[in-house]
Length: 471
Image (cartoon, rainbow, N blue to C red; front, side, top):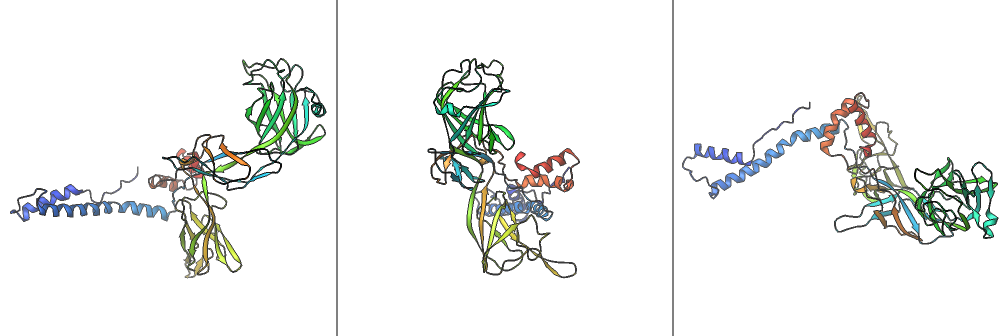
């Protein structure tokens, strides 16, 4: 059971007024008008109001000491965790050259009268690679592949599967290039021959060949109704898609495979056919994080003294590698500084800094007097007068980033030939930063566990510290 927080003085405004009026009767009995209209009572209430404020501040002294102790033992507030979601960029039309969506591209939700826009930034480069269809191969379950590219070029009707399809039959399409993380469109001139199936739920699965074998592709839309009518199929290709050799031909392979029907699901009585097919990329998907990128923020000049502290203009800081890229001006350009959790392993020549992600405070290494009287410098100190800047960092995070599916639809960065963007799944993982009250509750558990887990509460605390977004 925690010790009760002391209340150093529990008196309030009205008690001060009542006490003063009792003293008036003892010290000045001739003063008989104690109503609020009396000027003397007004003076009493003024002093009582000032005393009430002083008592309030006095009672906050234990909390202040508590927080100072937490800081002394290294208990810091957990910063917010940023939500993440995959965003898909759609092209205005197929392109002959690769389209690059650079890392840091910003997208956002719509701004409304009540809510500000929630901004996300891509975490890696996305290349939307152009492609064409180079091969068409069919394979009946348990048999060798059959190259049907020539038949398709002659506009013959090609059976996609066996005449009486069985689970495992497949149609393979070879692409001229691997298209990892891209949205692939297939324009198929299919015939209404694959009778017996429900066009809304055909017993088919689309897959792509990756470094780990065949992986399922997400079907964005199927306008063919299970290869039963002319239309297009749009697939989201997994990130590991690679070129491989099949039937003696190297290509980026995808396939449409017949699956076992579910309970009550209609199955093909005859195989569907196609007469022509085209393939091209119309978009791509990449990961994004709820954060805004800040570039080249000036922080001032170095004092040349150990332990100098600076504060970023935008906080909290989103974790990354690095969370902050700090630079100082040098004779030969800009000197990078590396973020470390603490200075205990830093030498005098190491360009190290620490960053408080919650407040955005940056600290250079201190000079500490050792037991023998020598002064040891932990981490380098920028020369006096050196210009300091934050070359790059990201700010954001919190529960506001947990937006719904389809909420991200605004391109804040213009990219040639990209017409729209959308998140196909809800953003997850956004957690607000820890409050002071939550830290005060956590501190005894942290000090007791000391990075070891014995009780269930210890495991809970260590897991929460390692991954706050899962709490």
